[in-house]
Length: 513
Ligand SMILES: Cc1ncc(COP(=O)(O)OP(=O)(O)O)c(N)n1
Ligand SMILES: Cc1ncsc1CCOP(=O)(O)O
Ligand SMILES: [Mg+2]
Image (cartoon, rainbow, N blue to C red; front, side, top):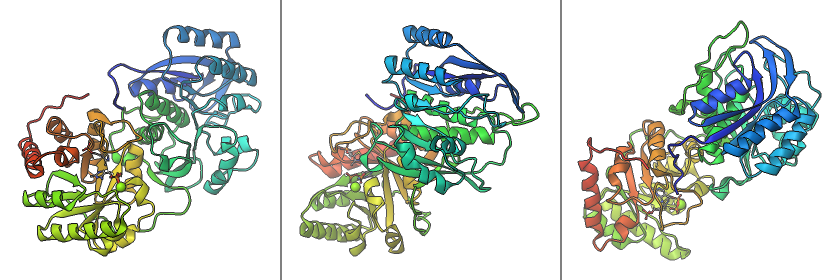
């Protein structure tokens, strides 16, 4: 199994109210889910009479009609993800929660607790108690006004959103996406994310908060932004993106939607629907919740992999063979607790590589890399937060960072590295991975988005048999462990890979998984 999408369209249930004006509600949900390659099913909770200026009437559907829709879908079109929007009454909310808990509690659910419209209307309802739904919610997406209503006190700033987090976390096992778009800040909009432990994600990001920052787009045409965001998250989850990726992809989708928003009516206009995000500038910056990143020197603008085949070895014997064979980009990756031996090996490797003017990256051990003046370091997500990036930069050491998802790639980019590693593409036995193999379709997508901004290298299960397909995605290099280290002649194995890559300058056809 890979994390790649199949060609069929996953089913997403949109449970929400109609918007006769077309910009929000189930109308926006269905457009979004369909635009993102899923099949939308529409479960109507209420019919609203509204336009771009106001909501003039809300007619709730009966519980019986709500259940009829749900039961019909369950028989024939079970969901891969569910988005829940406007609910018409407490009785309806309780009825829906009981049905969902009984029939589809295993399905990821995104809950947007719509309390009011962008025109200010509260849809004529009393305050709702979301407790029954929150027990089965996967991602909860309140905005500042909704957070204020949920916690029963004032909330209109980023600091107040952070302060509200413990209270919200006590209400639900869901990941929280607290939307800060309504906070008064002319330059940027910042949502706060709190991740639980999402499946197939590394543990170091679990139970952590993040800021998702995007430049503010000056438009009054933002009707249905919350509906679009929550239904896009559901659509990406339905396509097997990990939860953090579903969230940053949905953020990028909304950002593009705002950029391409348009006037519809005389009031708050509508958002554009532009398909799968393709532009790095639409993605949020992913920053720590508390504190800020230190200011770093700019990365080395002129860094490029000298050798597109980037072998990763664990000893100086193989390193020497590769250097003699002409390899000029390599990594020393030693997983050992023997500190004296480690220091000696790293020092020897750095000295050797300098003799050949090679780009030698030291994995993990950035202090030793600093001490012995390495050309570069390669750091994982767990290393980078505690590494002294400023000291490495000041020493002129080139920095490569790992990523295993869009989310991790965006975290890595906030450290301004010199290259970005994208893994793991195919199954590997070299390392136990929490994530699923990304596959070629996703690598292609990463390459489209990142490869023009920063040198990229693919890693994981790469060998002579699949190198051509890796090359064709547009990444600048391929890192290999077993394909070289398991060979009887490591230099020869490297040369065959290098030759294969260089032959493929323009001619490879991609066969996606
Ligand atoms: C080129 C390259 N890409 C990714 C990795 C993985 O590094 P990391 O995430 O730090 O994991 P370990 O290698 O330390 O297990 C790499 N080493 N090289
Ligand atoms: C260290 C690492 N990080 C992501 S995949 C991987 C191992 C790649 O090894 P191989 O090339 O043998 O599959
Ligand atoms: Mg590491």
